Image (tube, rainbow, N blue to C red; front, side):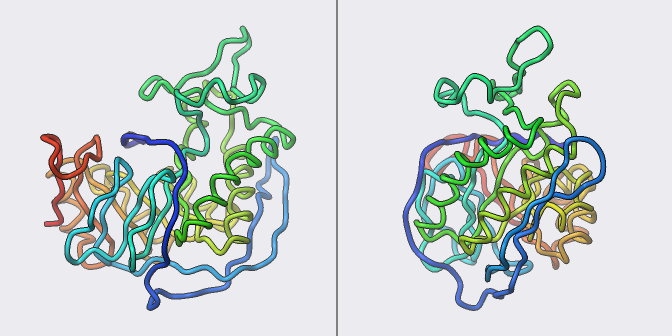
Length: 283
C-alpha cells in the first residue's frame, strides 16, 4: 500500500463556497451493513451534495493554505484552515487516528489497546489508533469527529476527506474492514446531512464498499506509483484526485489517466511556497 503519508495539521477552519458549476446530486446518507463481525447498519436522510469536477486542476494544501496556482479548481486543506474562494474545497480530517498533540484529550478507553493494555500506534506518524471495535465506541468517536465535520461545513467547505480509513491494516488484527466501513458510514451520514460530499482516502481494497460506506469520490495518494488509479476510477466514475510524491509516479499517472483524473505532484511534507522542500508539478 502507498503511505498514508502527508503532514497532518490540526485545528478547525472558516470560509466560502465553491464552484457553482459543480454537479449537485442527491446522495443517500448511507450506513454500514457489511456482512461479518462487528458490523451494524444505520440510516440517514438524502441530502444534496456537490461533487468535484472530473479531471480538473487540483492542489493539495493540507500542510498550509496559499493562493492556488492558475488553473486550479479543486483544493484540499486541513480543517484548521479556510476554503479557497471560488473553488471546490475539500476539508482534511484525521478521523481514524489521534493526532499526537490531541492524544491526551481523547478518553483513554477510545484509544485502541492490545491484550497487554498497550496503545496501538501508527509508528510512521506516532498516532494512536482509535478503538472502533464496538457500535458504542464507534458512536462516541463519531460524535467528536462529526464536530470537526460541522466546522468544515460551517466554514464553507464542499467536501470532507476523512484520513486513515486503512488504519485497521495497522491494528495488528484488532480492527477489521467491517469496523472501518461501519465507522465511515457514520461519518458519511453526518457529512451528507451537512451537505458535504465525502471522499474515500486511499484504501483501494475497500473501494467496492463505497456505497455501503456512503462515499462519493476518492482522494488517492500515489495511485500512479502503485498502479491503483484504475481501481478508484472504476469505483468513482473518474471522480478521483490523485497526489503523487515522485516524478515517476506523476509520469505513470499522467500517461494513463492524465485526461480523466485530477493529478498533482507534491512534496511529501506538503509544504508551502517559499519552503526549500516545496514541490508542485502537474506535468
